[in-house]
Image (cartoon, rainbow, N blue to C red):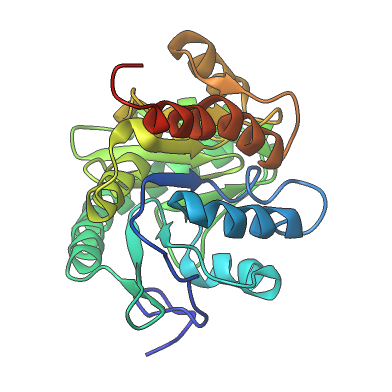
Length: 285
């Protein structure tokens, strides 16, 4: 069934894949693939992804957005669907090239959902008590609890979230962790995050970790970077300072521009086409 609801196949089709997947490109959405200014995704991006197909390049989106929220901006500008989508930092959708569709990865997604519902029942009371204390102590802070997830908070801006996070950090434990992206945060089960979701995708496409490209601008992207030290990890110029610090300390790439295109072009020169030239060399050279 095609739908924009979570756990349903989204409308639209991924591009055909000639041959096998050799490289896997994973993009955060807000602040990365979707720059702060301009269209949701530039037309140039889709042209580039289509051209790279002949080199075995597949791509996808790894986001904290829900599927409906993502598709509301992606579908109007996308001539084809990604090869994979990860939503809410945990739910996975993979291309089925035989049926030209993107299918939810069940029962994996259902297990994630049930485990996080269990966490919600345990953590909601102390979380909401803490938020009430914060509201009384810091009335100048502006934020709301998400209507569809009582473990999610949307702050007025990123600096407000910078203030909120330290006040909530002690609620983290061995089972719960804070997932933060800009002015949004949620508590989630510590076993599921952008890194574990991407590892599931990587295994499905049978791509080596050193052939991963991972780009993001927010704190929740660091989980993916940490999981793949062999990968090409990158951040746009507008990334949070904490993300840039991680890149500097771990040999990642920081673009001097917003958006993804300059970084994709850099990766093509330094990695994709360099690998292709090396592979093409005759034995003994």
